[in-house]
Image (cartoon, rainbow over all chains, first blue to last red; front, side, top):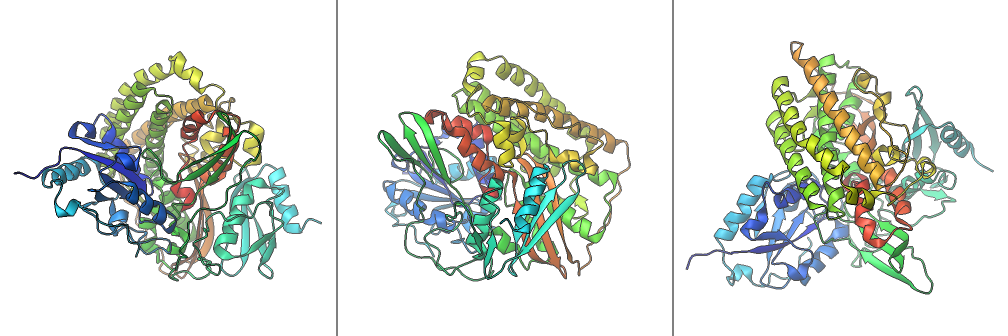
Length: 146
Length: 479
C-alpha cells in the first residue's frame, strides 16, 4: 500500500521567532496558498493536533511551555521545525537563551523565513511519502532540551 | 532631594523632548539620549553607577520604568526608588548571579523551575483571573497575559513578555563590522529595513560618509515599502478581530501581492538584507511603478469596502481608547500615538526625508478606529513617496557609491528611523572596527504599557481587536 497521509492538523508554537515565520504561516492560510484544501490546518489546541510546528531557536523561557504543548498532543504525532532558527542554523543559535532549535524533528522546512510556496510543497511532499502507524509516528517522548 | 540626573532628565521631558534610549554598559555608564522635537538635536545625560546603584527616574518618568527594569535584569545595577522592580526579562530559571550583559559569551545554566513570574492581580469579590499564553490558539508571537476580570470587563492586564528574548544585544558584542547586518536584519521581520537602516546610518555617520541622493531615494523606497507591507498586515488583522472575513482575506491578498513584488524587485519577501552601510538594494523604476499601480487597483475598492461598512465602524469606535495625555506620559510612539493626536513622526526630523515627507498624519479618537484610520492614510502617503522616489531615480543615471568603512572604525552614535511601529532607535558603540555595545530600542517597547492601560474597562472579548489595532511586535521588544 502506498504511503500517504490525508490530513495534518498543526499546532504552532513560537519559541523565539522574529515573526517572519509567523507571517508566512499566516500566508499559507490565505486564499493564495489555501493549505486547508490539502488537509492542512493550524488548530487552536494541542488536543486537536497531529503535529507540533515550532519556529524560533527555542528560547529558555519557551522551552517548558513547548514541552507541555508537545505532551498535550496525542500520539501518533509529528514534530516540524519551521525555518532556520528552529532547524538550528539561524543567526541566534549561539545566544545565551537559545536551546539551539528543535531536536529530533520529523520534518525540517528551511528558510529565513521559509517562503510559503516551497513550505507548502515540503509539507505536501512529506505527507505524500509517510503513513500513520509507522514507527516514526509512535510516541517520540518529551522534548529534550540540550 | 532629586539628584541632578533626575532633574536634568525631568527638565528634558518637560521641554517635550522625545526619549530616544536609556543605555547601560558593563563599566557602569548610564546614558539617556533625548531628541529635540523642534530641531532634531540630540541631548545626552550621563551618570556613573555607584556601588551598583543609581537613582531611579521611573517615578517621575514612567516611560523609563521598563528600561530600568531591563538594566536591573541584565546588568544587576539597582535603580533606587523604582516603583515596580519586578523582573522584566529575567525568569525564575535564571541563576541569581547570572547577568548576561556583564559576561557576554558565558554559557547559561538554567534552574529546573517554571519560567512564570508572579502576576499583579486585582483581588476582591467577583474578580476572576484569566491567564492567556504564552502559547496561543492562533499564529501569533508568544506572550503571557494575566487578566483580572469582573464579569466580562477587564479591570487590569498584566502583560508578561520577553519570551522571545534571544539576547541579541549580547550576541552583537565583539562582532566585526561585516557580521553585524545579518543579525540586525533578523531581530524583527516587521521592522527589518528600519533596523538595517539604523545600523547603516551609524557606520556611515561614524565614518563621515555622505549618502548620494540616489542612495537616499533607494532607502526611502525600501523603508516605505516596509511600511506598506506592515500596514497591510495590520489592516488585514483588525477586520479579523471582529470576524469581518472578506476584508481580512482581501487585505491578505494585497499583502501577498506586495510581498511577491518585493521578492521579485528586491530579492526578499520581507526585505531582509537589503540595506547595508553605503548600500541599498534597488529595483528598476518602471517595474516598481507597475507593481504599485497593480496594488492600488486592489487598494482603492478595499478602502471603500472598509470605510463604508457601518457594522465594522461600530465595532471599532470607542474601543480600546487612549488619551493624548496617556500617550505623552508614557512616551508612546508611532501609529498608536498619532491616533490619539500626538503630532510626531521621526521622519519629520530626518533631513534626508525632507524632500518627500509631508508631515505626521494624525487622528484624535485614540481608539481602534483612530489607529485603523492612521494606517489607511499612512499607507497611501507611503505609496506616494515610493512613486515620487522611483520617478526621481528614473531621471538620474545610477552610479554605485563605493564605501568601505575603515577597519579601525571607532566611536559612539545614536541613530533612528520611523519604523512601521514608530521611532526605532539604535545606540551603537564601536571600537577598532568591533561592536562594544549595541542597544536597540524599538517603538513597541514604549507602547506595551499604553496597551495595558487601553484595555482596562473594555470587555475581554475585545482584547484581540484592541491588541491587533496596536499590533505591537514582540520580537523587537524582547530582542
